[in-house]
Image (cartoon, rainbow, N blue to C red; front, side, top):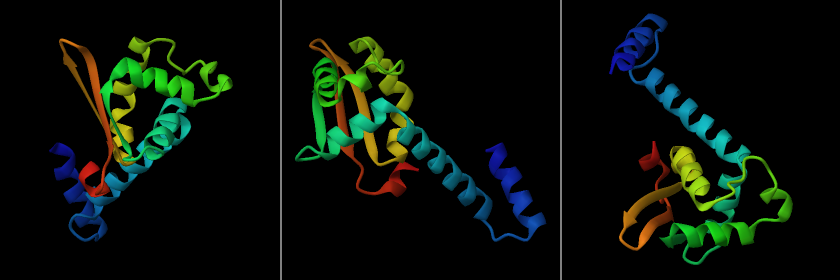
Length: 131
C-alpha cells in the first residue's frame, strides 16, 4: 500500500497518467518471473510436460508427478545441481517457483490428504488473472 502511494506521487511529479507507475511495476514483476522460469530446469521441464498433455493439466500425487518429470527429462538435466534429488526436494522447488510459474501461465496448487501430498497444475486461460 505504501508503494502505491509513492507510485502515485512519482506519477504526478513526472507528468505520467494515473496508474502508469503501477502498471510498469506489474510488467517488470511479470517479466522477472518469466525470466526465472526460462532459466530454471524444473520450470522448463514442467511447462513442457504440462503443455504436452491433453488436457494440459495434472491432478494427482506429487510423488507420481516427480517420477513423470524425471522420466520426461534427459540424464544431463537430472545431473544439474538445481534438479531435485527427492520428492521432498521437488515439493520445495515447486513452492519456490509457483509464483513465477503462475506469472508464466501455469497454476500450481498443492494440498495434503490422508493419501499423501496432492498437486493440481493447469494452464491459466487469462494471464491477467495471474498478475
